[in-house]
Image 1: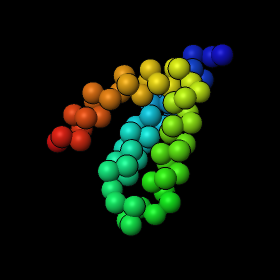
Image 2: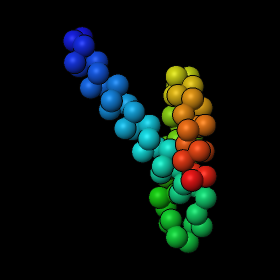
Image 3: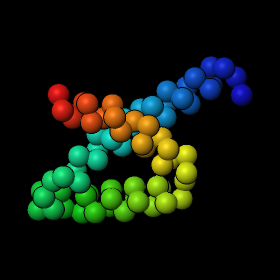
Length: 72
């Protein structure tokens, strides 16, 4: 794998990770507002975190930064 490809893949991961955190705010909203989106997101996140140790690690690594963003 070339260095350029590796950098692109890491950049893509960082974007997806940020989107997952930002979208997690849906968990705090009322189901009347979110409809099935909240349930589907929660199920997908649970599924991924149960199957992938690295995903769990990455989720917790970014948590502090995300909580800081939320508090601003």
